[in-house]
Amino acid sequence: MIRLFSALVLMTVATAASALDCKEMSQGNNIYALCEVDARTADIRMFLKDAQDEPLGQFDTLKDMLEGKGLSLVFGMNGGMYHDDRAPVGLFIENGVQHMRLVRGASPGNFGLVPNGVFCIRDDRADVIETEAYAADTPDCDFATQSGPMLVIDGEIHPKFLPDSTSRFIRNGVGTSADGSRVVFVISRIPVTFHEFARFFRDDLGLPNALFLDGNISRIYAPPLNRDDRGFRMGPIIGVVAPAD
Image 1 (cartoon, rainbow, N blue to C red):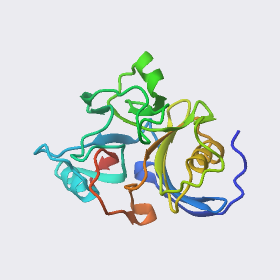
Image 2: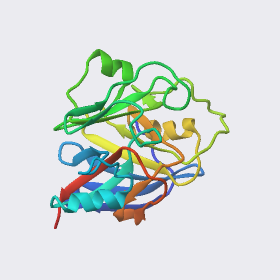
Image 3: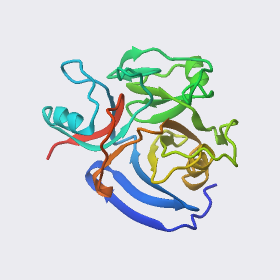
Image 4: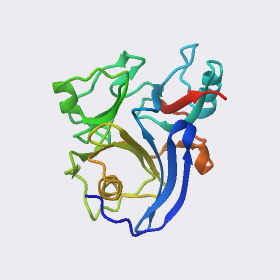
């Protein structure tokens, strides 16, 4: 059950044409910016490289590429962890083509803090799926990115997250509903712990599965919130696109 949200909803802006609903919400002393889409109607994609096979790196580069195809970027967020050359650390699928395999098992760093997971986009739904569950019954994803750790797994907070942790960073992630229709992208406005971030997805947004995307390079492109973050060049980028006006 979603508990009543007692904190102030700071801002809500809905973009009807793209079914993009963006707002800022608070959780105790924490503030989050989030954008929600309906996977049944929104055009959610993953991007990595341009036509010259070079990493896009920035939202502006992606916007320019889309404009050349008669499309506009409605929303964007960094889409998972990557190596120095911007290559994805784990599974990456773009337009049905797998560019990087699924990586299983524990390893150093946040990505290997298992269970980790996959954000899988299909024609009429999008799901955050724990890695071993994905490996056991591989869905036919049109787009996918693997990252870690999972924040929420079937309604349970990641077992290695500590409620009294003092490790705080700006963090971003994505959560999905059980039926795959509801997709919520979230970035913290201030440093938060993993446990706080996971609780926000589960308790305040009512989402049974959520995936951490990254920390230090967390960025968002959300015009309704006047957000067009700049900084380090990104690897995979998640984008919601629409026909250009």
